[in-house]
Image (tube, rainbow, N blue to C red):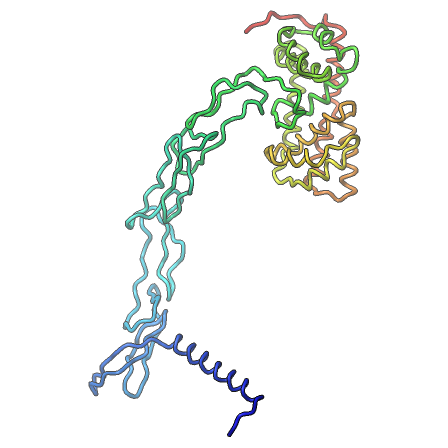
Length: 409
């Protein structure tokens, strides 16, 4: 019978299907083994038993192989022709735990505990990377630690099986000078004397800048106290050395001069009677703000929403992106508020935060961000800082309530 042109594709399709099915059958064919029939002495080809079973009765010339399930605490992982299953490993060895319990098809799987890896049947501790080197690839239960020498700008001061090389401290970001450069085994040593830099406007994540200081000292930075010389003479308590003030005049604006001077004065008068109460209250305010602002999961989008919610001059998106890349996550919110304050020096921070809370609420901002700004607003607006501010302002005009103590190095 001759096939028409229309029947040809169908025949080809059937032929292809035949080969596919035949190949699949051959690929998945049950493995076999040779067995001699004890009655007829005929050499037979019997089917093996699948995983999880064992041979109960070998095949004969007129019957197939009979398989039975593995009993409890025995297993068979592969096709086989054994008449029994293997015994499960009874217990894991020292410093091992059971990762997978034994069943009919798998043995009990043991794995080394954390900090150890398997070497010739025993779990041994991961190797420690010596000082000057850090972990490149952490050890696993099956492999040892891989170490690498610390590259330029990084160090490791101790032997460790888990720690990577860490970056050297950047003294300039901490507002300090470098005393000793870092090495492969030691961190950079910074000088305690601040390195004055008024050009970066808080983009360097300096830890000595606080929102509470800016809020509390703002009222003191209006004329005539904006003159650093007048402010230097008016501040009560232990006087700031004029030599410390001279660099301020060369590098900083009048407002920045006053703010830096107040920080120097604050550091130098921690033990001064009533001034101690002022400074203690300021420290308490700063700790609260730091806790409230220390969010760990702040996104760039959250920072842009926060900036848009604040009144006055906006910080441009490029600066916000730079902040997000250069600062630790937990400092993002506080640092963004510093950026805003540097561009809106005349605005009241407490009122700005209240405005931000209303805007964030109307825009359905993330609850964690809204809660943080609300709490910072409450701390800055609290009565205690305002009372301390009034006390300090009064002290500037009446120094008789403070006794000047001699300066001690």
